[in-house]
Image (tube, rainbow, N blue to C red):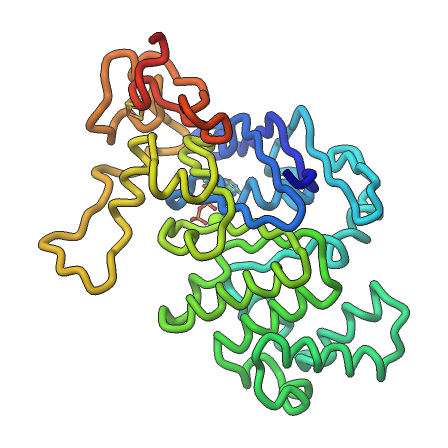
Length: 334
Ligand SMILES: Nc1ncnc2c1ncn2[C@@H]1O[C@H](COP(=O)(O)OP(=O)(O)OP(=O)(O)O)[C@@H](O)[C@H]1O
Ligand code: SF4
Ligand SMILES: [Mg+2]
């Protein structure tokens, strides 16, 4: 097993809202190993982005109030960084160099008044000693690698002259320009036309595999993870509900919520009488139910589910596969 490059223990994030305190993330433990792809999956509002932003201390505080028992990152040189207490200047140097992020909306992530080339050049200027000419050559090569035709021409163009898919390719080129050790991609394809989502995802995944970059893929769509992820964390209402290898989670899910997400994946070419969906809605984050947060939507709920939050426990035959349910995989007390 490869060593971890990111280790999170007991991450908690709270926001103060007009309705009261919102516990956005409630004690998340998460590891990312070198070169692997980890997917964080769950419905809207379950805390995926807040978890992703916390990884590099990018949450604005206030409004966020956060703490973690451990939040550590191991650099390319093997230095262990305690992200909780590291000076901002140290993290600033790591961001964009060793650690990159790609966001959901490519339009707002690019500067509309700077050419594509000038924006890529800035990355090399800030993090490397390359001359302007060398930066241009490296940048154009990167645009070519992400499948942008006529990259010399694109170099001079402005974001509004590119399609959404092209802009997302530019962002991937920027994120991968310095061969980061860790890339956090938050819903990188949801703003794109469905026909090019798969292309962009496989481009991202291939590039990360080639460069040995660990990828954290945040998505609400469990359907996209099979082709890219090694391991999956399923989140609901700020908690990890199930985690394990991609094949365990997709082929042998134990948690009713994961099963619901899998059942909601539309199967291509299959004629379905009715589109499956999980009944009910995600609870108001300021008024989560007692006991298991999924109890109001779960067909397997029993009395104990409404009283006590289940602990995260190991599946009988795979210690890497863990789930948070009183009733799945045999009762907790068996
Ligand atoms: N700046 C903020 N102020 C107040 N509440 C916030 C803030 N940012 C996030 N939240 C709350 O934290 C919870 C988790 O939000 P988060 O953005 O992590 O969800 P998500 O899983 O990424 O959802 P989506 O799939 O819609 O992007 C939500 O209830 C959200 O309303
Ligand atoms: S603990 Fe109960 S309510 Fe929660 S997922 Fe399991 S069976 Fe459903
Ligand atoms: Mg989000």
